[in-house]
Length: 171
Image 1 (cartoon, rainbow, N blue to C red):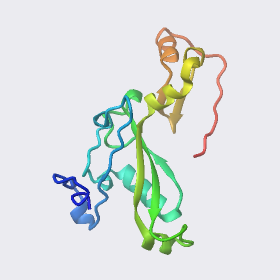
Image 2 (cartoon, rainbow, N blue to C red):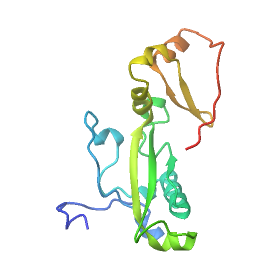
Image 3 (cartoon, one colour):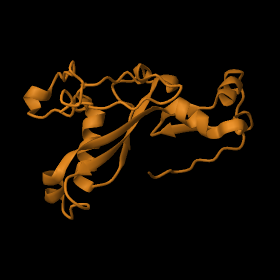
């Protein structure tokens, strides 16, 4: 348990766990150089299943045995690009290997590894030194996730791109 691991003040904070009969609390936060965990607005003990987007993603990951990316999470300050928090959910099963059937996976599930991230920071950092040369806007079903700062400035000035490419990314 978290308390046995030295987190004496660990407490689960949930608004719906009792009625669901299940809690999926955040039990560990990895500190990333240059990024404060509070920027992600997630804290130890938060019941991730209280967020419908996270709950559905964890359920799908558990059923299929596959990694699922979902968002924006309720922890997002707003739906604005700079405020969105998304996460990758990886199911963790007891025993050796991936259980072969959905009922076996549900029975062997012991939790999830969750990597939450700010889309703007993540996408922007992947462009590296070429960021000023690349005009990129990323959307998910019409929801703007990322617009590189250079593109955002030009669009604000009235720029209308004449060459665009729509690409489907599968994760």
